[in-house]
Length: 328
Image (cartoon, rainbow, N blue to C red; front, side, top):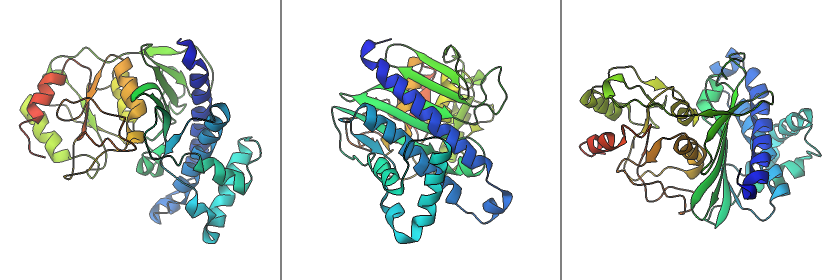
């Protein structure tokens, strides 16, 4: 391993694992009654708990590193939200996190409040795929380190992604370091990492793609048009979060398309950074819909990119060419 990132990887893996396990505990308590009431309090508790754990760990190990996170603690500090804050404190206490006072928890969460680009920074999505979380389906805890505009380390914690040979609900950790490949680990126990690779499929008739469950996140109509044009006949696999990157990286799908749903929308970096490195290190390719590399040196948004296309590499050029014929 690159010696300069050994401590970063160790810290990131431990923090994401802890956060993912807390998220899984909170998710397991979601009842049908909660879903019927469209009660989002479980995901709120898990979201803030996850960010608190990860930002605490990063700030302790690398106090000079900015963290671009999705959340801040402003609403938790409001008197009407003290119940939420106490529940977060309770979850962190149960997870044996040291000294999780209400004030400390808010401080940890706010460590993730950076917004501007730096030469070296972390980007975090404490729960990517909140609707998947509430449906008890796929979601991810996502963390990446970006240095000089390049993703150099990425970790995804996917609590509901089966790990081969384990209990189907055991969960999976994915990680990648630039130039060193992509790997998986079981979420719940230590073992030697297993290297993963994308498929070698080069024929669209044999291809399976994945996309977002929510049509508001990615245009299903455009992806269907494209599939018909390319001769892709298999039904798409729809799942939430950066778990889609993991599915491509480990060879369970060949393509992931996130197609624009409205003009001017730009993706957030925390929704993609870890997954991008995972796929690239597994041998795949990631660009925007025009074939341009994703630029992570523009702050918290992919300002210069439109949409995201992820493939095993063999299918990329023709897919991009076909996309040029669609209007977005």
